Length: 104
Image (tube, rainbow, N blue to C red; front, side):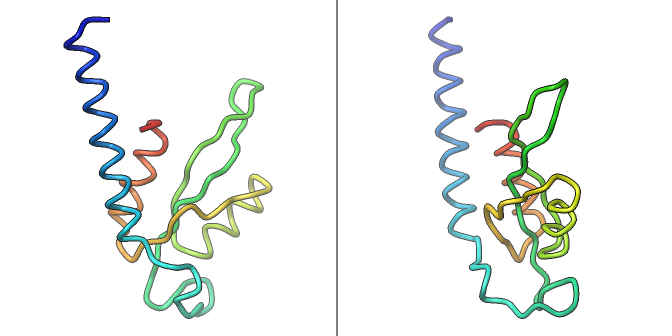
């Protein structure tokens, strides 16, 4: 691997790691919201760790959706769904899911 490529990989990792920490600071506690039917007040979005089967092997993946209804759907569909982080911003949840699925 060239030095330029190695520098890009390391820089990408640190940038992702820094952004992950920023998102973590923006996350909210699960018990700090009122559940009203299928949703919370105010509306929240969760990022969930799940196990999915791909080509006969089980792999870790991350999904998102309105909390807590999406978590219940994932449990029914896949058997388990661990809440990783909860956000009041859907865009933050999307970004975290994408970072985690990219491995970075």
